[in-house]
Image (tube, rainbow over all chains, first blue to last red; front, side, top):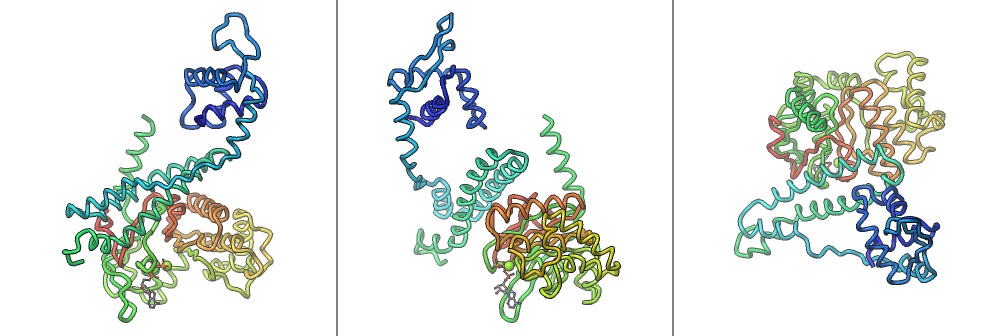
Length: 179
Length: 241
Ligand SMILES: Nc1ncnc2c1ncn2[C@@H]1O[C@H](COP(=O)(O)OP(=O)(O)OP(=O)(O)O)[C@@H](O)[C@H]1O
Ligand SMILES: [Mg+2]
C-alpha cells in the first residue's frame, strides 16, 4: 500500500475523523510542498474500506462520501504496526543520470568538468533555498529540509570525487587517448 | 512577481557594487610545490562567499593571500582599491587588525588567556582601554550564547563553545571582512549549524563580508555564491565577474 494510505490509517488511530479533517491533519504535518487532493483522500479511504482496514463510524444527513466519518479497525491497527516495523528499502540510486552525462561528455569530446560544475552550482542553489527555508521554519521544516540537504550533499560528494577522477575515467573510456 | 523584482534588484546591485577585496591571477609556490596557479577572486562588501575545492587545491593559501598573511609570488591583491601585496609586513599587519577578522578550524585562541580576554584582545591591540574592551567582549560572548565561559581558558571549553568564542573574537572589532577557514570542521552537524547561523547573523548586522573556506556543501549553502579552486586555479568567470 502506498505511503498515503498508511499515513491516513495511522492518523485514524487517534480517533474517528471525516475525510476533510483527515486531509487537513495530513497536510498540516506531512503535506508541506504537496497537499492531498480531496479525490485522493476519498479514493484512498474507499480502498481502505474495501480491505476492511477502516469502517464507517457515523453518517450525517446527505450521505455523500464527505459526510462519512471513518474509524480504524483492528485489522487496520495491525497493518499500521506491520508497516512501521518494516524498514524501508535503501535506495541505491544505481541508475544515475549524472554518471551517464559525464561518460557521454567524455565519449563525445565535450567537457565533463563543465557538466559537473553546472550540476554543483544547481545543487548549491537548491541547498541555499532549503537552508533559508530551514532558518525561517519550525522543527518539522528543519527536519524535512535537513533530510533533503543531506541527500543533496551526498550527490555533491560523489560529484567532487568524480571531478577528481575525470582523467582516469577518460583514459578508461578511450584507452587510445593519452591522458 | 515581488520575488522576481527583488531578484533583479539583487542582481543589478551585485553587478554595480565594486569589489571590496579582489585578487587577480595569483601565483604562489612553497619551494617546489605550487599552491596557487592563476587564482582570481572578488569579494563584494557584505557578501558571503564560499571557497570550495578538494583538499590541497589551494583554498587556505588563497585565503591567506587575500588576508595579507602571505604575499603571492605574482598577481595582485587589492583591498579598497589599494594594492596590499606591496604593503610592508607592518602595514599588512595593521590592516589585518583594523579591517579583518579570522576564524579557523581550531587553535586560534591564546591558551593562556581567558575566553573574555581572548575576545577583548583585538580591541586591546587597536588601543582600546581594558574596561571598554572587556565590556564589548562580554556583549559578544552573550550574543554568541557563551557568556558562561568568559572566565575559562580555551582548553577548558568544548569545541563548539571554543568556536563561538572564536567567532566573537573575529567580530568584536567590527571588521569589514571575516575570513573563516573550515570554521565548523571540528564540530558535529548541530553545533556546526548553530555556529554558522550565529556567524552569519552577526556578519549581516555589522555588514561584514565573509570569505568562507569549506569543503562541506551544507556549510557552503549558507553563502551567497561559491568559487571553486582546483589545482591552484579558479574558473575564468571570477575574472571580471
Ligand atoms: N606552509 C607551507 N609549506 C609548504 N607547502 C605548503 C604550505 N602551505 C600549503 N602548502 C602546499 O600548498 C598546496 C595547497 O595547500 P592549501 O593548504 O592551500 O590547500 P587547501 O585547499 O586549503 O587544502 P585542505 O582542504 O586540505 O585544507 C598543498 O600542496 C600544500 O601541501
Ligand atoms: Mg586548508
